[in-house]
Image (tube, rainbow, N blue to C red; front, side, top):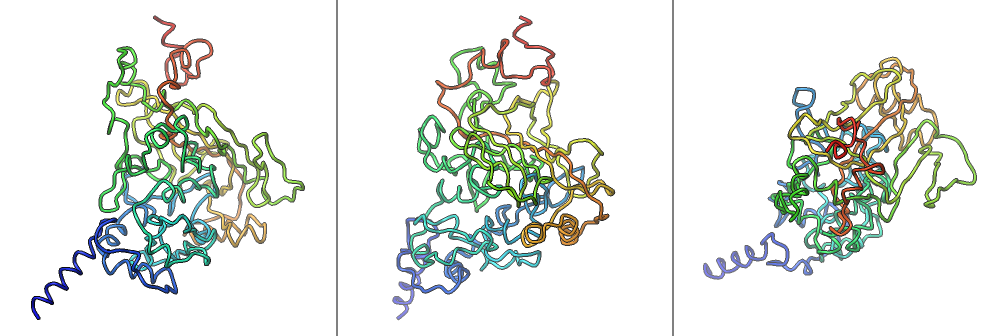
Length: 448
């Protein structure tokens, strides 16, 4: 009896090896599952440790403790403002459709309940797992939970992209270098994913569900980062002049000459124009809408050169409640760095500009309640009153609209070396660099 018992324990142990492709055959999972949480509870029978690790990550908490303005504070997607859909507070059911969890519909969401972890969104291999657009992270009711649970595996470009390609409310809106074309790109779109068949986690190394890399929207830049030199040596060229450039020019600057290569990305979003009925809807030369009653006026661009700034790896970040200056653009995140700062390099960025509401008496940028709020009653004052109350911030009752700007460092859509920038692409009368803004006064090559 003892031997049989030990044998059974041994089989159970082997069957619960957490590595995909070994041990337990997930195809033997039995349903039905009445809720997605029921799937997670089944996962936890073998993967409780993995869930515990995941619940310590920024992917789960949508933020972390960081030093900003000289003090430790919690910042992240959960509470930071942006110039796309503005902010999460009061808009959770819509925003959290990209949260790797179930049921985050308001501030009462229980981040300590492991049953709310969505294992399937990252580990689906069927390609059929879809979140409801305004379902607070719940899957579409049509999803066959049993079929998805039975075929889980390692994450992929498709699973990562199910959220990261669709930020800002849809495909190819937020990032200039991430969109659905990166699911299966050609080599000239991205030499790593298309030419080499690499996946996201080949660069974004992961341990205990902690994924390297972080968005400059929701960080100050002090966290774990991904660098080209993680794989490539710092002096990779046969040409000594090119190798000399790498000290002050980021790899991305030359090797990502264009962004939004196949699909246009949004570059302007004016909320002050929202709330008006326009028929028919206007479209631009890319076939993209330029106006939406719910969201205002847009501009798009495709296959264009990024903007370039000195960058030392950190950013200045606007924190909700910070005072702004009348008549001055609000920069939600601006890269630190300069020509004089020797650790700075010239990096490429997508710049997003727009206009959004602010408290014209308290002089702070505000959170409007959009989902279930403004999009129903079209009353900005009520939307801001409700949104700021939920965010726990004061609102004077007076508002206007202010121009804002955000920058997104460009890392993806790396071109083959044959299509990298050449000397005259940056230098000379038609060069793309604004040398004056970069602190040179004029083209440094012309001084030689």
